[in-house]
Image (cartoon, rainbow, N blue to C red; front, side, top):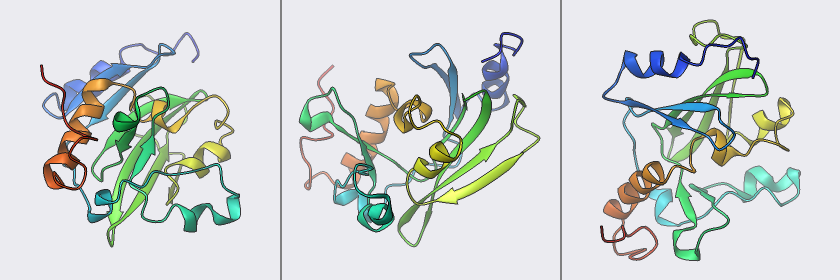
Length: 188
């Protein structure tokens, strides 16, 4: 990110709705703001524990990934490896010297991924481009040339254990018998 960009953009966004927004710092030092004001929802497809897989041929990605509701987290034990993607999850973040608002939506029990690009506008008021896709922002990352150095998990702030635990708990609360150990919270 250019050094002249204000480092307080995230505090301004959080201050606009402190009950529903919080800032987290990514491993690369950049900040993201997660916004829960739309309300998180668990869908029936989250009962299947199917993760997006982008290793298959691009022609088959959309069909293969239909009904996926998770991303796979490497470097974790198997039972803690699935991170739910829930409608209502919104994140404000930066990637490739541009500012993005990424939203997970739902239509007909299918996940949709809305991305909005704001150029250098840290106030998120002057939208430059947008798109909706079914591949967990994978197409947006390719379009902006970000797939090699920015992961979907990082952009969505899904490396923060508190955020991951919150999402997993919501799924576990709705489907406690299907996956009794995958999302169970560890004793405090």
